[in-house]
Amino acid sequence: MPPDTEKRELLGQLRIDRTQRETGFDPRRRRWIAAGALVLVGLIAAGAWFGRPGGAALPVRTVVAQPIASGGAASASVLDATGYVTARREATVSAQITGTLTEVLIEEGDHVKSGQVLGRLEDTAQRAALAQAQAQLNSARALLVQYEAQLAQSERDVKRAEDLVARKLVSQQAVEQARTQVETGAAQVQGQRKQIELAAANVRSAQVQLGYCTVRAPFTGVVIAKAAQVGEIVSPFSAGGGFTRTGIGTIVDMDSLEIEVDVNEAYINRVQPGQPVESVLNAYPDWRIPSHVIAIIPTADRAKATVKVRIGLDAKDPRIVPDMGVRVSFLEEHKPAARTEERVRGVLVPAAALRKEGERDVVFVLKERRAQRRTVTLGGAIGDSRQVLAGVSPGEAVIVDAPAGLQDDAAATAAKP
Image 1 (cartoon, rainbow, N blue to C red):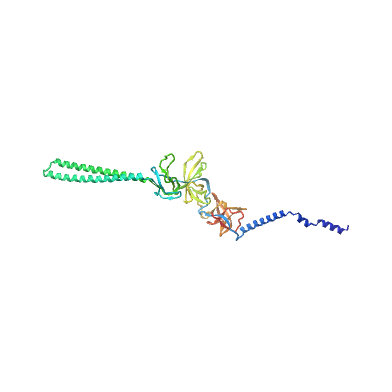
Image 2 (tube, rainbow, N blue to C red):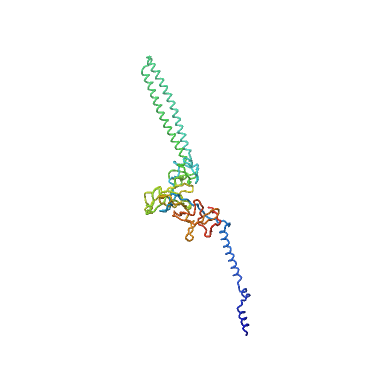
C-alpha cells in the first residue's frame, strides 16, 4: 500500500462521526443544563439590578446615630443586669363599705385624675339615713326657737315682778320664782343648742356614709385592670366565699415608674447611688433610655445571692409600662478630659451595623435613598453599641443588619417598622 493511502486511512479513523455523537446525547440532560443556565443568569441579573444605581430600592432597617457629648469619651459599661419596670405608686381601688355596684365608669387604659369618680354603689339606705339625720336636725332647731321664746317671756316676767315688789304690791317670793323660770329657760336653750350640734354631727356622719358609695381615684394615673362589673358586691374585706370583690380596678401612677434589678452580690461593689445607667427595654431594643441609680436596697436575697437595686428613669414615655423586661448597663462615672483639645467626640451606633472588611471597619449609611459605604474609626463599647469616632455624623441613618450583597451607592429605602 502506498504511503499516501495509508495516511488517509489513519486520518479517516481519527475523524469524529458527528451523526453518532448527536444520536447518543440524552435530550433530558440537555433540558436540565438549559434550565440551570437560565436560573444562574437570573440570579446574576437580580444581583446586578439591586446593586446598580437606579435599580429597585432594597428595604433596610435603620437607626439614627446618637451624638456623644464633647466633654469626654463615652462611658464604658462596668456591669450589666436584667430586671423589670415597676411602679412605686400602684393601688387597687375599692369602696370603704360593702355594697352592690350600680355603675363602673372605668376601662383598662383609661387616664384618670385624682378625685375622679370610678364607680358607684347602691345608696338607698345611706340616703334614707341622711334624710332622717337632717330631719332630726331641723326638729332640734325648731325646739330651740320654742325654748328661746319661753326664756324671753320669763325675762319679761322678772321685770314686772321686780316693779311690783318695788311698789309693795307682791312679795319677794314672786320675784324669786320669776328669776328661777329665767334660769331654767336659759338652761333649756343651752341644752337644746347641744342637741343641735349632735344632730348636725349625725348629718355629717350620714353624708360620709353616703360618700362611701362613690368610689374615687386616690391619685392621678392609668387604669391597668378592671376587676368588677355592675351588679357585683364590693367590700373592703375578703368575704362571701369568693363571690365578693375586694376592688373595682387597679391604678398606676406612671410618673412613679422605675426599674428594679437583682445584682449578684459579688459585683455590688461596682454600683453606687447616683451612678449613670443605660436602660434598654426588651420591647424596644434600639431605644436607649438614660437612667441613674436611686438606691441600693440594704438587704440580700439569701437564696439567689443577689442585692436589689432601684434605678430611676430620666426620660418618661408612654411606651414604658409596668412589668416590662429591661436590660441595664451600669456606666463608669463621667470624667472630663484635662485639656479641651484632648476631648473625644463621636456617635453611638448599634454593633449590628458594623461590618468587617479585611482590616477595616465599615458601615452603610442611608442617604437620599442610597446606601453609602463608610469606613469608620471605632472607640469603646457601651452595652450593645459602639462608639464611632470618625466616618458617621450625628443624626445620620445607619443601616442595621445590612444584607450581605449590599453594595456602595445601591438603591435602598428604610423599611417600615
